[in-house]
Image (cartoon, rainbow over all chains, first blue to last red; front, side, top):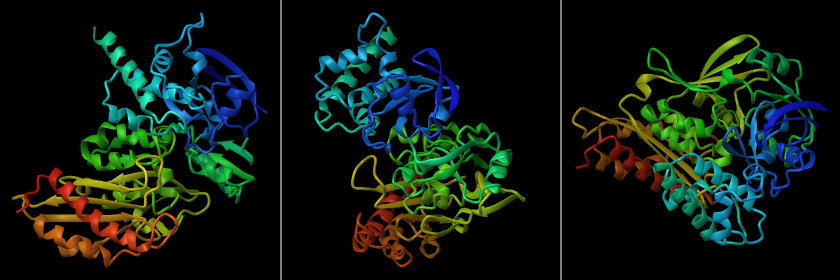
Length: 160
Length: 293
């Protein structure tokens, strides 16, 4: 076992890990952040996407030891303390971008990275930016609608 | 949980070399997007890993005083694409790096890993070949320099002895100044796919912008390793774009040696070599402001 320190969802965390585990293992099994889904476990489906120092990565192919000293953000960290949804989550609800929900947390985290860039994107650019996620239910259109909408709204607020 | 025996997190390049030299079976891991997948597949199970993931001294892109662009190997694909230096001087390489895997993978996968894995489909390899990239290798006995094209030995095999690390990728000023480039990746899907064929071109024109002063053509997946087509390049020197477009495909075919795999047949790959070489030249020539008659 090895003890690592990291900042998870804005809180400092000290956790004992097995050096063989992935960050997805640590977040799910030791910190109970079960929004992080394990789908393919080879970095293809994007269900385990979290932000590390602001960059979306597949936590299933990221060793937990590497996360020492880093800032990790998961869906649990973007929901407000009173349980209110983040505008990105709300946009997914409003646009019916969720069906079975397995890919949703990962897509939300990529959306956090997209929205956080403060840039505007064309629909094609959004498609490309979410290309590291597989969704087997929705056909993607509503997901793109949701991200497009929240990018648009954020941009309005920022440029005011 | 990964099936690994141990992981040693190196504190410096020297420390990594020492750790590797002390364990003949140790495997280097950097971004992890290839090594961890192999472990998951059982190909490297029980491996002892030496991690260079956290080494800041191996990250970044810089410009030397003599104009040499130095890309450190642990720079991720997305940082290569996002580098102002790459964007300004060799945008075709930034574009090529942006074709690997998907967005999350490009935040962890590194250009050094792309090169050291030695696979023919590596998205940055063919473009690096057209830039005459040189590699700095550091080992227990010091540093040595090797041309990228001499680095490849065979499929998945590079001339890197145990205990050696790639510590820099260098591109000299005469190899990028005045050149414009293009990389075309042909794959079955637009993302998260491995190239069926990759074609890279860098081209430089003479003063009148009508004749090709220098052309460089390279392919991925057209042979067991990424390859340059020197004979085609020599023939096309001095030609106009229109002349070159008519010949480049058939000339390239004389030098490639694609095979049939489950991804595509030899015949299809040959067709891609013929077609993509022309398209890549056309696009690179357009960027270079080459006048086609």
